[in-house]
Image: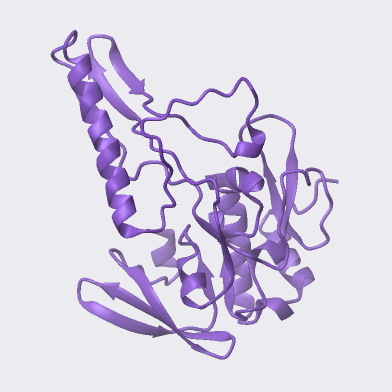
Amino acid sequence: QLLLDAGVEILYGASVVAVTKKEDRIEHVIVETKSGRTAYAVGSVVDATGDCDVAVQAGMQTEVFQQGNVLAAWYYSLGQSGYKHNMLGCADIPDSQKGKEHKENHLVNRRFSGLDGDEISELTQLSHASTLGNIIKKRETDPDLIPVTIATTPQLRMTRRIAGEYTLDDCEMHKYFEDSIGMVSDWRKRGPVYEVPFRTLYSKEIKNLIVAGRCTSVTDAMWDIMRVIPCCAVTGEAAGVAAAMTDDFSSLDVVELQEKLKKNGVVLHES
């Protein structure tokens, strides 16, 4: 409702499938819907696809998550013991952060990039098969058990990101960045606070493209922190405000952007 009140045109069931470019700028974003393909002329573009799809289509340099994603099939069920969360497969973390105490329970001995249509379909089928097998097993002792919610898109946590003007690492906690557009924390533990540099949201390769969410320029170790919703909100607000200000992010006056963010209540620096 807020989007509609602001005059936003919402397009459900739509996918960005291509762009047209002139030199280092995107001129059109081509979108496919039930009614076919439409080319939208653009000023500035925010890529919040989670997979950097627009950036790749525009030819911007990107990086993939080298470790890959593991199969999971978490679901909720209702049975004799009540409403229960069944965790099939592990919730993975970057390899560099694993200690001896980290235990993994792999459903299959492989990993998934999340960037191939056939692979994603296979991943989903494997996840649903694991869920079904677990339900059948549980019904041997609880014949009335039913699934309540199953995984729709199973655990594609990190896939592809831009190689931006700055790449933020997980060791840069409590570090001051002059061009910070907000702060995020490590959702997995208390203490660490990170300022997010504006330079992690764009690359000079494509002047009018900015990214938000898990597309931002971070190391693999930092990716698991930046992919979650509070971080998406911080980078999304900054990207949206910047996109309303300019169609050349490399030349944007960051101080002016920061002033607008501060007026919106964003805290830029830890000190």
